[in-house]
Image (cartoon, rainbow, N blue to C red; front, top):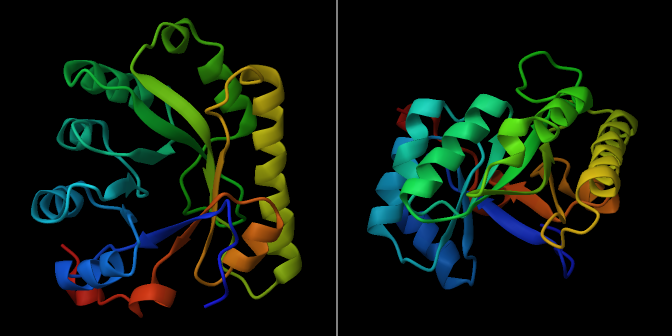
Length: 216
């Protein structure tokens, strides 16, 4: 695995991995772990050291927000105003401000969740968002197409970076917290870092291939 440069956070994608594997990475100094299922992340949060920063990287249903609101470090996958409203509501109950990333659809594959830039603008200009006190949007997240074409991957990551720059300039210019670009996974994170990523989501390069038989 290539060296992660200073200023880029290595997010260990621990979904489906047992707690002993997570503890092994923890002993090496990893503190940021990513899960895509609320139930699995909550179980691990309760069992593992409390200085771990848990990131929800999978699609988040509104009815599951309440389970992670007390402890989640960063929600990477906000793709609707409705979800943001629910996070704000549950964060308020916990007397917390929850950090979130807006997830964008930048890949050519239809299966990926995410916003278009215009949809993000609608959220940020809505009265509902302007009244929220318990969420903090601190950046963007996206996934590249699963392809062997490095040119296409570069292009898609450049596009996400351009969305980040547009939002920063137009909506968050005075907000020091808006600084996160979550892009890049095990197969393409070196390209993502080249294109400006600040968080890379790496699973198989740390833990090995996932065991899908353990998914619930």
